Image (cartoon, rainbow, N blue to C red; front, side, top):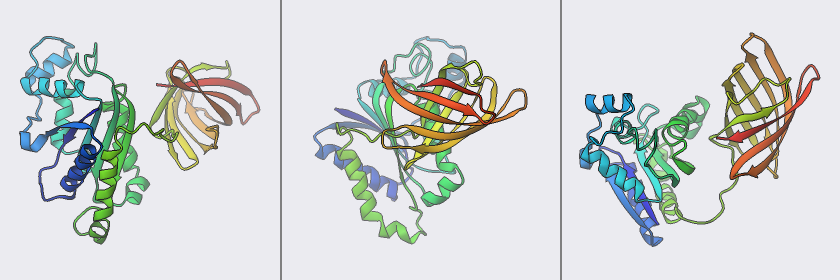
Length: 308
């Protein structure tokens, strides 16, 4: 099995470089292969050219794709897993990595009539100066995941994992205290990258849409649900169709059944709320939830949502 690592950090004197080295050692010790694009050492050109912009903007599949971009395409299609390793700069990847997506995710490769293979997995390992609690409390971690998983990698990989090494700024005393433990964790991630061990069920960063609903319901196939999970707590934002904005909050049990309350504003300006019980099923290779819901006015119905 082969991993393609996209590494982006301007300095070798960094925790991120040490974390990358530990991760690679884990891959080697597992007997698997890797190839790497070290974007700064390659001096990868991150600015999209006018020609590249016009090609993508006009949805052209002309063969005039830059040589360095074609090389990245080949690395992707020769691999089973893609791994992104980078530091968090102002709640985003470094500009060079953002530019890598701008150029490498070209029309006819990453979208349109794609020639990009669907990879088994994408793993993100990133370092952040802020502690995890701050990133979660301000919604910054969710924002990072939504950009990477909900946009850049959505529909291009089968499974995703986001690994955050927090509190790594140089003035933070926990940086040195947790140094060896963090590098050990990075090593284990590399060593177990291709492990067949079953991943624990989670709704984190999974997206759904309604494929059926009772006449008295308001969600439809135009409504998108973005789910999150922490422990046995689940929540989601949803919008689209007749729903301007909605939120749900509840729990998941040991059998992955959901129980939650929901509230949204519809396009008529009405605030609607209710409760729902939801049971999971895997059908045709996709996860579905079969829902029984009840508005606060007592009206009941059923719906089915399916993972995108």
